[in-house]
Length: 270
Image 1 (cartoon, rainbow, N blue to C red):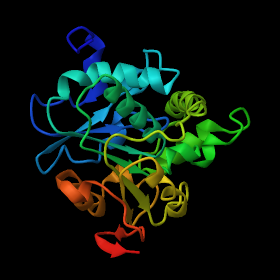
Image 2 (cartoon, one colour; image 1 turned 90 degrees about the vertical axis):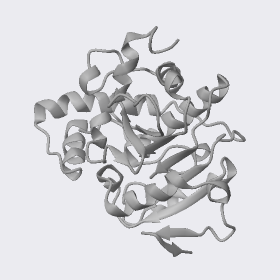
Image 3 (cartoon, one colour; image 1 turned 60 degrees about the vertical axis):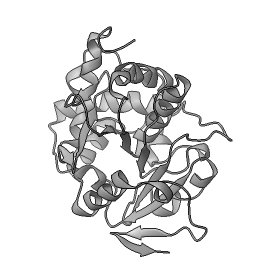
């Protein structure tokens, strides 16, 4: 199926992909949609930034959300297919990473052009399970409305309670779907991965982000100065790093040093 066969396909993209040129497709994390990337530039050098808008979120709230990562990925790849005729990249933060990984697997299954790179922020090796405290709480015993209001407040976008109630319902669905996610041991990610940790991340700390990725991917690591949600603000330290990641070729795309070398704000860190 192509976007011409599926009228809803264009609703996946905010803004719509340009007809040519490189693109980074940005996956939303749990409970939010494409507007979570509103603070990102429209372009990073010559690369268009395109947020992804799944069913059930923001301007697609009247559509039923997908109840599995596999179905989410299949629907997205239907929409992506006409736009995979050029170099493109995937980027995501925290709970977005399982969706990105299953989308890459679906692209590989269909024999389509793979992303040049996956940029994975604040998420540990997928074969080791889930990350972040909300993936382990009793969903009937936690106030997700309060959690949602706190989340948006930390992101610099305070939310009214009535809107928070709607967003909390989306967050609950995401968390329910997330708990069924499994990344099979021995499975490999078929494109290079840049794994990003944040120095002051209190949700998925750096020491939880790095171990095990080299078991499932050709990986490089970056430690950037900042907090958990700074990925969504695209501060200068991230924007500068994105320029490097989006231009890296050859040896820079693959491998992980034996001493787990990282960078902090562009400086080498071991």
